[in-house]
Amino acid sequence: FVFFLFVVRAGLASVVCGGGMGGHAELEEGPTLQLDWTKLAKVAETKSAVVPVAVQDARTGAVLILAYANKEALDETLKRKVCCLWSTSRNQLWIKGDSSGDYLDLVEV
Image 1 (cartoon, rainbow, N blue to C red):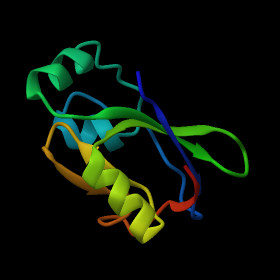
Image 2: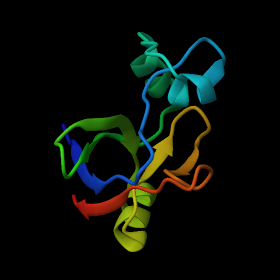
Image 3: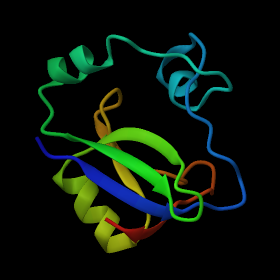
Image 4: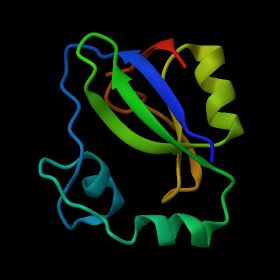
């Protein structure tokens, strides 16, 4: 079993995990905690070659995100020096901060 830990320096904006019932965008970025008890089954159904990733704040030690990465996401994380993950719901590279501007700068893997 492989597991990555990305240690990042978060910007000024806070990172919120969880969501309501409005699809993957709200589930991933919504204002309240919503546990998806079927997430692992959904990931398995995609047959994506991914590993779990815990994204941790370098200053506080708090875990900001528990997500997934594939080889492309890890390669982009190391190349760009920002947190890049694999969205299993969208089946595409997810560069944390691309839409919000709140990038998570990589400190170490």
